[in-house]
Amino acid sequence: MILVTGGTGYLGSHAAVALATAGRELVIVDNLCNSSASVIGRLKRLCACDVQFIQGDVRDTALLSEIFLGHDISAVMHFAGLKAVGESTEMPVDYFDNNVNGTIQLLVAMRRAKIKTLVFSSSATVYGDPATLPITEDCPFAPTSPYGRSKVFIEEILADLHRAEPDWRIARLRYFNPVGAHESGLIGEDPAGIPNNLMPYVAQVALGSRNAVNVFGTDYPTRDGTGVRDYIHVMDLAEGHVAALDHLEQAGGLLTVNLGTGQGHSVLEVVKAFERASNRPIPCLAAPRRKGDVAQYWADPSLANTLLHWQAGRNLQQMCADTWRWQLNMADTS
Ligand code: NAD
Ligand code: UD1
Image (cartoon, rainbow, N blue to C red):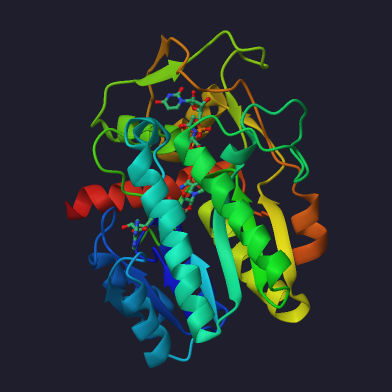
């Protein structure tokens, strides 16, 4: 059985579906600080199996120890954490407490229970503004926010742990820009308030709940002047986690892998693809560059391809179509 921390959140819920599809049993722990327990009912429908849910905080080592005692858990996928870059600059201590301390408490409980297999949610944000493209895993750390530094600190703690106790099996997965939703339209990303990220904002403009997309920067040295990112479908990302877990179980070790498509798309390309998917016009307004943004980056995903035998298969059009289906479903049910 796999423990999924943060399993009612955006990425964790999709990983839960991928795990269940691969025949794995799972239990979810989440404190619901950025998600809702209603996801569990939808997961049960999608997984066609029982999905156990425990509401709690990963910083609560006693609770985690109890979970490990009461379930036959062989590995942990650790998604729980805070993730808003801007917010992290205003509340750095909360970010280090939740992300770094949360991971330490999880590791303490895992050591006690002798569970030594962990898949950890890292981010391409650990690379900062990369000197060369595409980004390979040996590019140096250069985080530019407390959020990014929390991921670097955790990655280093995991490397130290593995050095000290080489029988641990650890994957540090560096995600590029996860977008999209499960193709059923039953689960997806539901950001509170004004979306920080491009895809959910574009979806809300298509729906008519926001007027226009503010394009942050139209004078970048890119093919159309707007920022370029490596968007990856959330189900490809979820399947990458199952592949990483399979690899760890067979080969062990400390794995550090980019999860991206290897292809960059500009803001305007995303807007155009979403117009096609939704069949609605999406007005855009040129806006100043957003502080802290870089012009462009995309992954070199070849390590994941060769080591994990995993490749992102869903294209930008599918990312937009699945986001749109989810957005329409949410609008229907709200
Ligand atoms: P999310 O906010 O949707 O999900 C995180 C979940 O963790 C939420 O359900 C939240 O309630 C829960 N949580 C937070 N702190 C907790 C705690 N202390 N104890 C228990 N539960 C807690 O975020 P997401 O997009 O699914 O991201 C999941 C992970 O992936 C995070 O670690 C994030 O930093 C990382 N990541 C996300 C992205 C992205 O674009 N979404 C990119 C790179 C890395
Ligand atoms: C952001 C985070 C990154 C995180 C990722 C998750 C920052 C600096 N980085 O990345 O750590 O892993 O989200 O997906 O916050 N854009 C607009 N208008 C908008 C929103 C975005 O033009 O309303 C542009 C941005 O300038 C950027 C691109 O769209 O060029 C993508 O932005 P976003 O979705 O926020 O992702 P990142 O900034 O790449």
